[in-house]
Image (cartoon, rainbow, N blue to C red; front, side, top):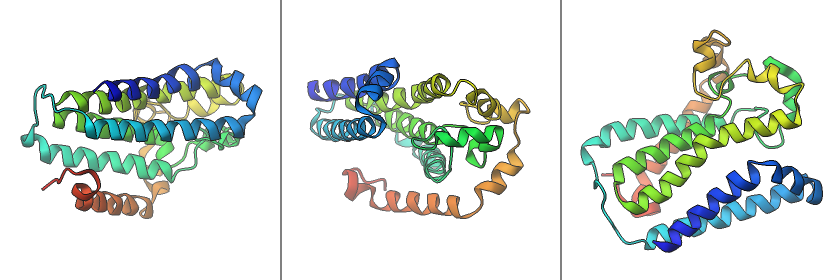
Amino acid sequence: MTSLIAASAVFLLIHFVVSGTRWRDALVARLGERAYLGAFSFASLAILIWMGRAYARAPLIQLWGPLPGLRPLAFALIFIAFLFIVIGLATVSPTRVGMEGKLKEGADAARGMGRITRHPFLWGVSLWAFVHLVVNGDLAAVILFGSLLLLGLGGGAMIDAKRQRRFPDRWPKFSQATSNVPFAAIAAGRNQLRPALREIGVLRPAIAIAVYAIVFFFHGRLFGAPLS
């Protein structure tokens, strides 16, 4: 369990303390944008592998225990999470790495899933992590999925702050047309759902459904925890 705690702590540390603060700006100024992104991506992947291996070896310490009665609801929520994750990855947005130039389009850059939330991937990860945390109900799951949940919930605010620092003139026009919290901009009348659904189209949700079905079917082989 010590290894899992250490890995999760380091994972949150490099995101919240390094990537999420002006330390990132200092490192980019010293190393260059590409070198920083390469090093950060490598470190993040390495720590995720560390977390996964530590989780697999962690002792089973039940807290509230498994909740099999919640499985139907869990499957539905995970499906929604996959929609946000896959469609988010397939959506061009100024909040994604390397796409900051889209901010010059102002409010027009908020298209498709970007009308619903400017951080769909992170919200999808948050929902996925929350469901796994609740349904598993053991200490190791709370540490692993709780860490990913914290990053998912806090990551959007960190990205927003970085974009605001780098593009103080362009960022407000885009951010006013969308929202961090899903559907908040639509509920406030700053955007609309109908064009979002039209721009998302059919292909992206179809891919999300296919990915969800594949993971569902092979979950036991991939992660050692069959769903049936």
